[in-house]
Amino acid sequence: QQQVKQSPQSLIVQKGGISIINCAYENTAFDYFPWYQQFPGKGPALLIAIRPDVSEKKEGRFTISFNKSAKQFSLHIMDSQPGDSATYFCAATAYGQNFVFGPGTRLSVLP
Amino acid sequence: GAGVSQSPSNKVTEKGKDVELRCDPISGHTALYWYRQSLGQGLEFLIYFQGNSAPDKSGLPSDRFSAERTGGSVSTLTIQRTQQEDSAVYLCASSPTHGGYTFGSGTRLTVV
Image 1 (cartoon, helix red, strand yellow):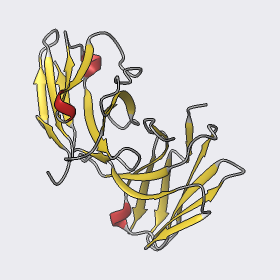
Image 2 (image 1 turned 180 degrees about the vertical axis):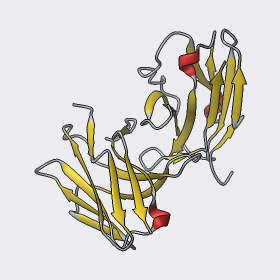
Image 3 (image 1 turned 180 degrees about the horizontal axis):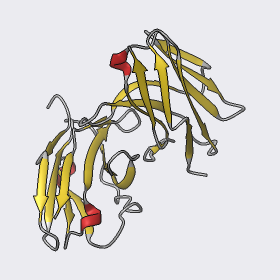
Image 4 (image 1 turned 60 degrees about the vertical axis):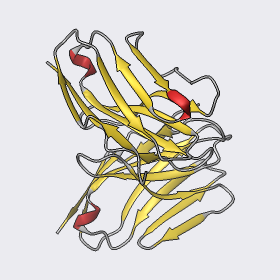
C-alpha cells in the first residue's frame, strides 16, 4: 500500500513534443504529490507539486494532472526541449511521513 | 545555508573499513532524510529524522548502517565494515515539517 507505481520506465520524445509520465498510488492518506527532476551527477530537484484538493496545476511548460478517484497523477511536459532530458521521479506522502518515490522515468528529448 | 550540503562529494574506501558521510540541512528544516541511489536506479529510503522524535530507521539495510542527528541539525550516516554492495550515491534531503524535500548533491561512495 506504500508503493508508488510509475510508467514508462523510459521515454523518448522529439523536440517540441509532449512528454507524459504517469504515477499511481494506493494509500488514500497521501496528501502531497511532488515531482522531482534529476540530472546526472546531481541530486533530485523539486519540479512541481500538487495537493489533492485540485485536479491540475501548471507551472510554465510543466503540468500535473491529478485524478483522486483513480488514485493517479501525471506529469505533462509541453514543448519538450533537449534540456528536459533527465530522470523524473514522482512521489507521495502523508503528513509527518517520509516520501515514497516511484522508480523513475528516464526522459530523452531528441533535437 | 542556501541548500543542503553533503560531504565528502566522493569517497573511495577499502572493503571492511568504516565510513562517515555528513549532511548539513537547510537551516530551520525540521525533517532530514537519507536515501541511497545505485547507478541508474531509484531512491531507496534509509532513515528519517523529524524534530525531536525517534528516527524512522525502517529503511536501514543492515545493522552496519547507523545515523545520528546532533542538535536537530547536522546528520552523520555511518557505514561499518563496508562491503562492495554498499557502493552507491548517498543522498540527504531536508524539508519543513510538511513540504517538499530539498536534496543535496550526494556522496558517491565506492568500495574497492
